[in-house]
Image 1 (cartoon, rainbow, N blue to C red):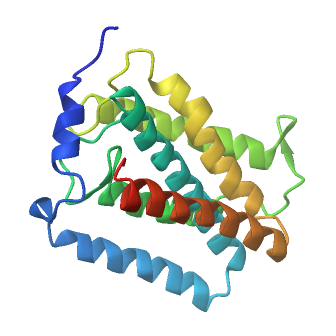
Image 2: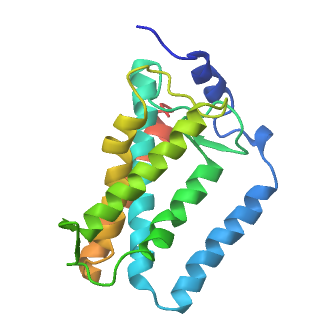
Length: 209
C-alpha cells in the first residue's frame, strides 16, 4: 500500500503528551475558552453551551477512534507530527482541541431561530451542519498541505473527512441545540462518559493511545 509521509506517525508518537514541546500561549488559549463558556453561562445560554459540549464530546470520540486505528493498523487516518505545543492524541494537538471545544457553541449562534425553517427545502439544522462541515473540510485540505497535519493513507482525504467526521460533529451540535435539557444532558453525558472510560483504559491502563 502506498502511503503519504508514513514517517509522520513516528514523529507524532515521539512527542505524544510530551512536556518538551509546551509553549506558554496554551495558557492564553485556555483562558479564552474559559471566557467563552463563562460568558455564555452568565447569559444563561444553555442551548449554546449544550451545542458546544456536544460537538466537543463527539470530537474526542473520533480522536480516540483515530488513535486506536493507529494502534491497530500502524497509522492513523490523520496525524499531527509537529507544530503543536502539546500533542494530546496522535491526531490532535491542544490548539485544535481548544478550537473544537468552542466551535459548536460559537457556530450555534448562526442558526436560524426557528428550528423548523427550511432553506431551499432542506431543514436548516441539516443544511448548516453540512455547510459548516464543508468549510472545515476545506480548511483541512490546507492543513494537509503543511508539515503539521498529515493524511498518511492516500484513500483518506477531504471527502471522507467531510462525510464521516465533520457532518457528525455539526449534526450533534446543531440538533442537540434544540433538544430538551434532559435529552441534551443524557447525550453529552453518554458520549463524554465513553470518552473518559476509553482514555482511562486505552491511554492510561493499556498505553495503546
